[in-house]
Each structure stands twice: as C-alpha cells, then as structure tokens.
Length: 450
Image 1 (spheres, helix red, strand yellow):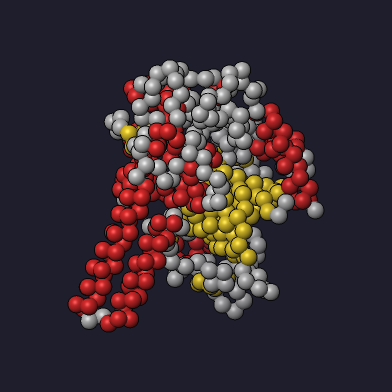
Image 2: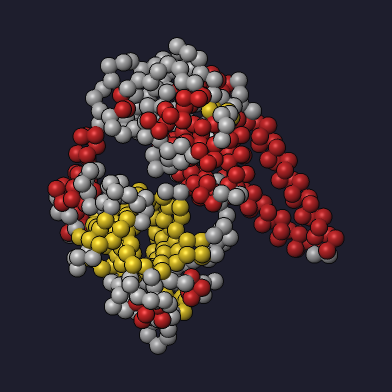
C-alpha cells in the first residue's frame, strides 16, 4: 500500500514539474514546413536555462556550429567528428551531436523518422566503422537501435527535426533568410532502394562463400545449412536492429558461490552477503534484468532473497568483464510530492547531489559524472524477466532513475577496495519507491557463468 501511494505521489510530482518547466507559448508563428515544431507534442525543454524560446539566427556557418551547440547545452563529440562535412542533406556534426545526447527522446525520434534517408544511412555506415575501435560509440549505437525499435509502428514524419533545433543547424547546406524543407531536400537525396539491393547482394555473396568453404572441407549438407542458417539469422538481426547475442543468462540458472570476498569485506562495507541454496554452495537466479541507458547495457541477476543481485557488464562477445554485487540496505516510500522533491528536485534533489550520506554518517562521492554541482539521475529502462510458476516467464520494461556513489573501504587487498551506494527510483505496476543498495566489486570469473 505504501508503494502504491508513493507511485501516485510520484505521478503528481512529475505532472507539477512538467507544468512548471513548460515555457510560455512563443510569440513567433511556426515555420511553414513544420520543422520548427514549437507547438508539437514534445514540450520545449530541449535546452536548459530557458533558451528554448529564443529563435536562432537564420543562417549559421559551419565554423560557428560547435560554439552554437555548447552555448545551447549540447554535448559535441569533438574526438569523433573532426573536420566539417556532411552526409546527404545532414550536417555531420549535427548527427554526431545527436548520438551524444541519447537521454533526450527527440534523438531517437529523429533517427526513427529518417532511418531510410540516404544521408543518415551514409552516416550510420561511417559510425559503425568507427565503433569497431570505439567502445563508447558502439554502446551508444546499440542503445540508439533499441530506442528506434521501440518506436516501430509510429507514423513517420519526413519533415521531423527535434524541437528547438533550427534547420539551419541540422542541414548541411542551409540557405540564409529562409527555412529549408527537410522532406523536399530528401526527395533529391533518397537512394534507399539501392542501399537495400546492396545489402541483399552482400548477404548472398557471404552465403555463397560459406557454402563453398564447407564443400571444400567436406562438411556435408547439414553443416552447410547450419552455417548458412546462422549467417542468415545474424544478418536478419543486423538489418532489423535487434542485435544478436547468445542466451547466456536465464531465469532458473545456478552458479557456484564463493564467500571469500564477502568474508574479507565483512565489517568494512554495508553489503549483506547472499545466502546460497541449502546443502549446496550455489546461487539460483529468480529474475534477469537488462538495464539500458546512457549508452550502456548492464545485466542483473536477481537472487531468491528479493534483496540481492549481481550486476554485470559484458564485452562484445557477451562475456562478463565487470561484476558488482549489490544488496538492498534501505527502502523509502515518499508519501507526497514534497517528499519526492527531496529526492528528485531538479536543483536540490538528493539523488544526483555530488555526495550521498548514509544513516551512519559516511559520505560517498558521485561516480557517474563527478563534479561540484548536482546533475539529474540517469534515466534507465530495465527489461525484467521473472519466473512464473503457472506459465511462461513474465517480461516487462520498467523505468528507473539512478545515481551511483562510492567510497574507499580502507581495507587492505585482497579485500574489495571500494564500496558503492546505488540510489534508485524504482517503478513497477503503478508503485514507486526509493531503493538504497550497497555494493562491491566481485571477480566475474568467480561466478563460473556459462
């Protein structure tokens, strides 16, 4: 009941915050092409500090664009972009700035509406090539694909631009004194049909080469068909944006439990060690969560005590390369809007403050984007798969807001050197609550996951 009441209070608080942050209607009329989108369904909260109603200059030169982005609250990827250039009708800096601002929904809206433009496809080909040697970019592209896939079925707007982004910034060759039309420019650039033909031809060549190799090795028809089937499946996943990963983590799986790191950390952290299955030093997974946000994907393996989890980061092959164990140490159910403001207020909210203090007075520094001022908690989506005794496992996508803090344990090696505090706003089924969990690093090899 407390969580249900807290969920209602959180909804009311967010409604009030949205109304308070919504700027007054601009005096200027919308541009004829509609790309200005001042009156669209998305509110003008794209830029901070009240700049969203200031109509930009009618023409912005390439040399001025990086400064324009920084002045209006954008993150620009200088390490990726390099010299000015364009992709079809789109300015290259604009596209790379979008991928660096994935927390803003309009980013995915843009790529969804223009995923078939020849320019965005040219940019994506270059971005995929760069991502081979750039892990951060690769994770951002994967997160973008997930967000775009979630919009499947939504009507496509060929004239769409993010609210408050002037066409003079987004388009590669703007014309001074007038607002260019995105759709009209695309009419002269669209070679989508040739792109798909090239993909199909490449897929056929790959299949033929694999078949020839299997014939030479004497693999037989069965082996050839298996390889071709796998290649086809991977190609299908790639084209659909679904991704391709082995099913490594499953509800009901078990793995061995080594109590050594928890014994070494006893008394130095607030972590509560997990309890293995009776009669065997093994742990059972009762739920699997996939957390996405900020260009990163994490896997969570929940234990039967409904309090503990192992949080994993995996490499490109799906092998865990980082593991942290978290156990819940407190839960708060804010009863009204004022209590939610204590945690989430955009200026004074506790979640996102440079430091977090636990009840025993210990201070923990912010790990995500450290600095002297508050930042908003990270918006996450957790896709949870939970065991269902009466039928198939249940999967649902749940919103999360979280911030991670850390402090030294003060214990000599080989004990864990760092203790983490994860503060999260949890939501599920109309309920909401704040969860505080203590964590520490664990060697992923200890889990012997298969």
